[in-house]
Amino acid sequence: MKEFPKYLLNRIGVADSHTLRAYRSQGGYQAIEDVLRKPWTQEQVIGVMKDSGLRGRGGAGFPTGMKWSFMPDITKDPRPRYLAVNADESEPGTCKDRVLMERDPHGLIEGCLIACYAMRSKAAYIYVRGEYRLSYNRLQAAIDEARAVGLIGKNILGTDFSCDIWMHKGAGAYICGEETGLMESLEGKRGHPRPKPPFPAGSGLWKSPTTVNHVESIFNAPFIVKNGAEWFKTMGVPKSTGNFLCGISGHVNKPGVYELPFGLTARQIIDEVAGGVWKGRKLKAFFPGGSSTGLLPASMVDVVMDHDSVKAAGSMFGTAAMIVLDETASIPQVMDVTARFYDHESCGQCSQCREGTQWLHQIFRRIAHGKGSPADLDLLVSLSNGMAPAKTICALADAAAIPTLAAVKHFRAEFEECIRLGRDPLRQESKTAPELHEAHA
Amino acid sequence: MALPDKLVQEFTELVTHYPERRAGLIPALHRCQEELGGWLSPQVIEDLAAFFGLEPVEVFGVATFYPMFRLTPRGKHLVSVCHNISCTLRGGEELLAHVCEVTGAPVGGTSPDGQFTVVRVECQGACANAPMFDLDGIYHEDLDAQKAERILRSVK
Image 1 (cartoon, rainbow over the protein chains, first blue to last red):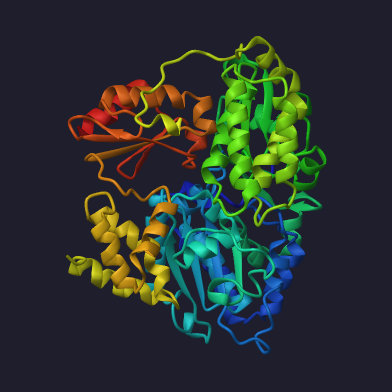
Image 2 (image 1 turned 90 degrees about the vertical axis):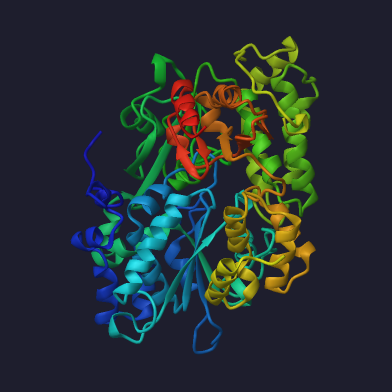
């Protein structure tokens, strides 16, 4: 593989990379200083973000600059406005934002300042999943350091720009990674997603204009402001620009979080970046971007990893969380685990999702345990078509249904064999843990 | 009973971060759980309701929505073992069985000596370092049976 320029993870190599001193010594906070001192207009900041082509890294791939431009004109709409940073990294397989928050928290903070300046937000809330205690503590310490030197608070760097940044802890609910569920949770409620419209830019947190951005998207902003849109577009492919963080896990020799340019194939990432499939085994399948993205069989490993190419292959780029399955993996068991997850995480508002995720889980579970019936595969398909696309308030039902359709499409024969044999030939008997509540299993 | 003064002071500052007081509720539930025995008793729910000007049932409704909040007492140490996909692919279920064996606790229960409560949890975002568990708020990653046992015995 050719060498390529990197920027996202360059700073984390130095000692105490999470401190203000280390961040400053590597050019940190120069982008926001430039924006405030020159000063840039809000439109200029949004303009460079748009021109860069940066697409959100949280799963949907929506252009970040475009999202920023949806905030209403302050001269016509004087309500306070907010930035919410989605640091609720919970998509199974995804473990990349943690690296940025634990080891380069000031980079995220500088990104928040730029975003708040561009959108005239008076405050940013960083919503971190509750389990990420180290991320939370590192970010809080970084906020305290930045506040102490006048980078957060009133009249930042002596200008008339004022902005607060607050940490906020979630409590283990996946649905709060959905932007409207996140806002409900931030307001101190159950994380029930809101119907859209209204969209957050019109009515978000406390009914005020709000933009919700993903950690890695915001983290890109200082680099783009400092180096320009043209620089950014030299990396990646025309419609997916820049580099991205790829967390690769499962059956590979070197699982990890890697900075990569868009445009490599899944094969290159698995073989050349992650050291190949482990134990000398063959590849069977992979999730390209987290468990909500449709499973792709080994025959599709030459798919190019960018938003549009993965979509054309019938899946999604998602959070670039590749989960690799070797030839010994049982697809019914894998689907049992992922279906259980959506069953557990459905918020319960929409019947299609509340009931559908439970049904999908029960069906995959019985097939994986050799108790499936020949009608089950058609039932999985008809249920999934009743849940998605876009039949519910948010996309959780889609996240359960679309991978179900993909699994049945690509691995129908394997499911049929489990049903015919009355057992899963790939199941390996291992120690099982004693359960207190059988119902949970 | 009422909330300890220390927490009341903390929450009084906390609510200034938000335009509406209620937004401090989930962070406050976390702090109560951390400081007041590792779970949220009915009394704590009532005290928080009073602080936030809510009905106890509203606070209860929020607390029950979020898996990190516990409404029953637990052992001295809490072990949360990930059983989602990346961990399962690399031995997460075997790790869980081993944790139960070492601690003497069933999944979802507490060991007879009251030392450990063991729970299954969904993805903790440690997928590239699977399998893993969280012990009292600290991640332990790239685990195997020996390493897990050593960690658990060190706090016992």
